[in-house]
Structures are given as structure tokens and as C-alpha cells.
Amino acid sequence: MDNGSQYFSKLSKQLVGFACLGLFFLLMGCNGRHTDRVGTRTTVVKKGNIDVKTLRVDTLSINSFLSRWGAFTEFAVDFKTFYSSQGYHYVWFDQKGLIEAAQHLLGRINAEDNDGILKKMPYKEELTSLMDQQKEKNFMPPSLELELMLTAQYFSYAKNRWGGAELAKAKDIGWYLPGKKLSYSELLKKQLTVSSADVEQEAVIPQYIALRKMLNHYQELEKKEAEILVPQQDITKQPIIGDTLAMVKKLRARLFQLGDLQHISPSKIYDQELADAVLRFKKRHGMKEDPSLDSRFLKEINVPIHARIQQIMINMERMRWIPLGDHGVKFILVNIPAFQLYYYENNKLSWSCRVVVGKEMSQTVIFGGNLQYIVFSPYWYVPQDIIKKEILPEMKKDPDYLGKHHMEWNNGHVRQKPGADNSLGLVKFIFPNVNDIYLHDTPSKPLFNEDIRAFSHGCIRVEQPKELAQSLLEDMPTWTSKRIDLAMQSGKEQWVSLKTKVPVYIGYFTAYVDSAGQLNFREDIYHKDARLLDMLMQ
Image (cartoon, rainbow, N blue to C red; front, side, top):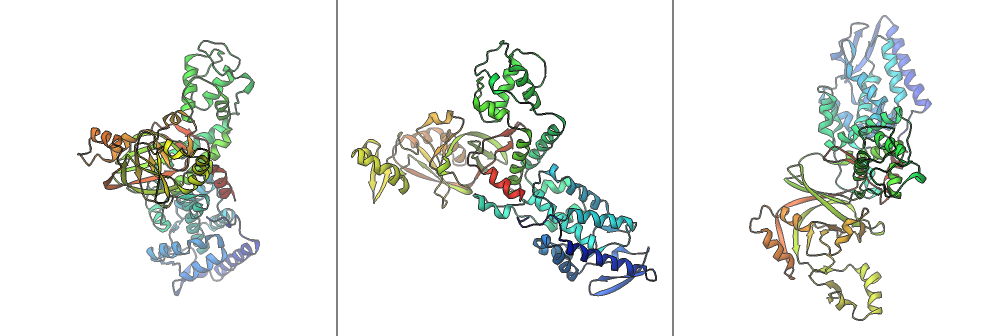
């Protein structure tokens, strides 16, 4: 759904549509008969005795409909593909009138917030009006306008719910992962024969469904309960088990409200149950799992429920963009805001580890590639911008700067020699790409202990590089654990080609459900959520 979509049709279009309907009803009143265009011929049917199977939709009717309802023109191909597959029959009517799926669609459109849809559906009032008019006629004769309107509304709803309202503009906000391609015509065909749940499972990844469940929980929370905030002045940074503290009552109530505390009580004692709830909350928000209650903890626990609902919706939109299907026996996912790498085998999480990603000024790019090579004891070929901004100024201060940092000139470029001090560590993992981004080891191990791990120039530093190498080389038995250690410590660069390329996806999700079923939130380190929210709200 593009940014230029209208919420309602212009009054002139409305009058034209109603005038056409009025003429239709007038003709119905003449001798109890009406004419309905069927393909390239005219069929005459008697009022109250209409065989719906004889009614047809032709391409002229579709074109005329799309000219009146401009927000649906993007579905022109879907219209013709769908009705061609149906022999141009009506699909939203049977001999009794509107089928149940029509009312169900209207209900889903009116409850679009429950599906995490921020982009408003066009012509909702007009759809309701056409439905009401059809009911006034006791559902007969079938309205061609309503038939086409229901199909158009389904295509629009399916795009918003499963296809991604802003997928076409994803690159405008720096999202270069491959996008999902859905056939709205095929979805409608299935929708008319199977349940919505079955269709949805074929349209979106399971993470989307899990996230929507959490959305509905938070929506109910917002409706039923008043916001509970923990006053900053009451916070004790280092609470001790058994202390009686003023802030405990509010802290206990807030953690119970958010689901991290299972039982509520009026006690002002900071007990073990409350301390465990604090740790659960901190884990879900990517903070150090220690008992301290610092300013970041206070900030995260006081984020309003409504803001969390928006955050979930924003990430549901991103989940809609993810292609379905088999990603291969193995694949790697890096979630930038979570500073985490996930290694999947047979579509199940095998293991994960921490990563360091690019600083805000040198952001890690959101894209995908295929990991092809492992390089043990690598050289680091220093990028030209780093040479200009960092190395050359240091060389002016200290002529021996390159030697002290195990660097050398190489054909007009600077490279750092293999070894423990190499900025890439002892191994790197290459998935060729125009961004020149790769995964690699690092000598700066203490950075993995930080909560916010955005320190690199754009590449991704891996906390457990040997484990990653072992996982990637499992189908090459000669690469034992000992051999991998020797290669990493040899001081001599060695390239290894993988037997099978492994997909790598670098994504950006600030809200997600983890493998334990817990809802997680992360800081929007690159300020991408607000931009996507603006696009969805337009």
C-alpha cells in the first residue's frame, strides 16, 4: 500500500457509484427484470430467481471499477489473474446471497489494529455502505460493485497483513534483505476454500504469528489497566535481599503488570522473588543480568505500554518482509539491535553468541549474502577511509606507528599481518558483497561484556569464532577441532572454501519473541523505528 493511498473516495466518485446503483435498482423495478453484463453477452434474469453461477465479471468491469477506486489500481494484475482462474464467476455470492467469508473479511478489516496494521485500509466506509445496501435487498440480486469491492479489499488487506505495506520502499530506509513475493490471487483462492489460519501459515514466518500474539496481549493490557510507573527518586541502585524499600511496591506492581513477576503482594521487602523478576526483565531487554537498578533499567521499565505496542507493530511490518521457504540446511541470522548471532540447522536454532556491530556513524548494513570462505590467520587490508582518518594522522605523530601495530605497506595499501593482535583476530568469514562486510574474530574481547555493542566500522565481530568455524566445517571431517586451532594460530593466512554456501541474513528487529517464548525489546540504536513508523502512519 503506497503512501499516496486515500482513506476515503472523493465525493464525486461516491456520487457516481451510488448513481450507478440507483439506475441498477430502477431497472430492477421495471417488469421485475434486470440486465447484468456477463462476459461479452447480456443475460436476462428474473428478480428473486437468479442463478449466481451464470453471472460473470468481465475485464471491462474490472477496468471500470479500478478507475473509480484508484487506491486499488496496484492490484490490476491480481484481479485479472484471479478472475481468469475462476472462469470470471462471482466468488463472494452463492444462491443465498453473500457468503460467510464476506462478513468475516469486513470484520477483519475493522479489527486491523489487532493484526498490527498501522497503514489504514482505503474505502472502509464505502465497503460497509455497499454491504448494508446488499442486506437491504435481502442479499439479492448480487451487486457487481460489491463483488469487485470485496476482492479489492481482500487484496489490500492481504498485502497489509502478510505482504508488507511498505516492502516496496524498504530500501529507502536501508533494508536490503531480499523481499517476500506473494500472489494475492493465490491467497484469495485458498482463503475461499480453507481457514484463515491455514492461509496465514503459508503467508508469513512463525515469528510474525508469535509477535502478533504478544501484540494482542499488550493491547488488552492497555485497555484494562492503568499505567504503572516507577518513580526515579525512589530507585535504589544496589538493593539487597531483605531490605525494606519505598520503591518496592511500585516496582513489584510494574513487573507484575509486564509479566516478569508471577505474584503480586503489598510487601515492601525486596525479596528473592522480586530480584528474580528484575533479572527476567533485564534479560528480555538485553541488559546485564545483575541486581543493579541503574538509569537504563529505569528508562526501559517506564516505557509506556502504547509505545511498546507501536514497537511491536513496527517489527511485525519487518517480519512481513521476510521470505518464506527453506533457507537450506544451515543459515546464520544476525540481529543488529540485539547484538546477537543465531546459527540455525534444519530451520531450528542450534546455538547463538554475542556480536559487536557498527557504530551509528558506520552502521552495519541490513542485507543478505552467502558465506563461501573461511580465512584462518587473515591479513587485515585496512580500508582507505580508515587509513586517511586514523592511520595517516597517527603516522605523522609516530613514524614507527605501522611497525608497532604489525602493519605494512602492500602495493599502495596498508595491511595488518596475521596474529593475535590483528584487528580481525584469528579468523574471518567471507560472504562476498558490495558493502565489504564480513564476520570475524577480534582481539578486543572485553567489548562483548557491554550491553550496547556498537563499536565497529561496520563489520561484525563474533564472540565465538572457533565454534562458528566448527559448525560451518562439520561436513568436512578433516577439519577437526585441533586442526582449526592450529590454523587460527599458524600466523599464515589460509583460505578454506565451504562445500555448500551458507546463507547469512543481517536483520534489524527491536521487538521479537525468543526461543523460550519470551517477548524481547531492544534499543533502536540506528533510529530506524521512527522512520518506518512515519511511513506506516502516512
